[in-house]
Length: 279
Length: 275
Image (cartoon, rainbow over all chains, first blue to last red):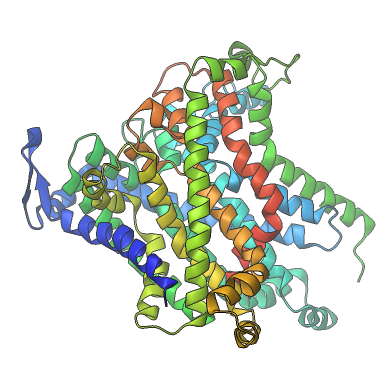
């Protein structure tokens, strides 16, 4: 048993401890002007309920997660189906190249997209060339700024979805499809009655994992808009970070983290159950 | 039923365009890194007329980029090494032994992937302070290694599960200790898994931003993502030329490593889900 000991110690110290300590912290408030922290029970959570910015963050987080995960799944499935066609040349090369955004440093990705969405950036030049005289200033217009961040995050997240779905498609039994084709089932019928049901478990795990990752994502919004303009693209991860490290309200920041954890409890439980069933 | 020739050609063109679109932001980054900032602002859609290498000399000479590159590389390589040693042992143990607390351990490993980073960092802050690990690359190394453990040991457990126990039993009958049997017979067979795990650890620690942002307080200690986010600033005119050069150099190591080991990595990433 000597092999497992170092792992157990590390895991305990560096993941159980901060986890417990972080939750514990959410029941404390921080006095202003460095007066130390004091036990305040559920005060932080009560404050959250009446904090408009928290609700903005929560709403944005839901929009952000649903839009990213949803578009990634639909686009990912379409592209995976396309690349799965037996007569596509260079399939192996495409599959490797398509994953490059996923391997790209997220901050780099955020900076590239910040440039693309810039007021005189390539996107607006393109729109100008198409005849749109006054394209929006994406990153500093409420409503558009979150949209721009979502596009950037989809660019990062899409590759993994495509490659996982492609692997799933390639493991499907071909004889079933041949039988269905002989029986006269068309493309759409085969997709909805064979492909989707056969890949149900894979898709569920993928969506669950992707939801967890997307929900906690921080880098993109921090580097593209920093939550602006006027907090219109604020996400909970960023709001919590600002509370902890700009306003030094670690208790309040922890409370936001606890709320995120509670929201993620459902997908996490589901993910663990599915993975253990498979194993 | 053979598809029509026109369908074949159309679909091949569509696939090519889709891949090109997905890659276009990266291509744009490469081009911009060889253009002057004024040119980038004035002609965002035009191809550069000549190769301008000033951005690269600028980023290395006028900023702390070189230093930060070395920081990133040190943190990443040490993390990769630690991750491989620890998760090979852990994965092997999870695959071969029954022990008390194994199920809760696996459960915790899986669940910990979902913990919000902010909760972890606030919980860790006092610990890091107590042991002077704040503003210290060692602090990042310890954190990143911990983050890689759940996924990587789970992944390697899967590889070890597929290698028959009879192999090391035979070696042990021939006089090997269990550790020798594992090191000489089982580990070489799990090399694809270990390559996948190493690549994963490299990508994670090289690309990580949030914890590095919180922990590294001094310019000299920044890793590359933190350097870039400071360099771009919070508003106003951005020096896109130099920034693009820095961003490209930052993105290159993980991309190159990924291209080299993608066969193993893709297999590792998708095997859990497909099976």
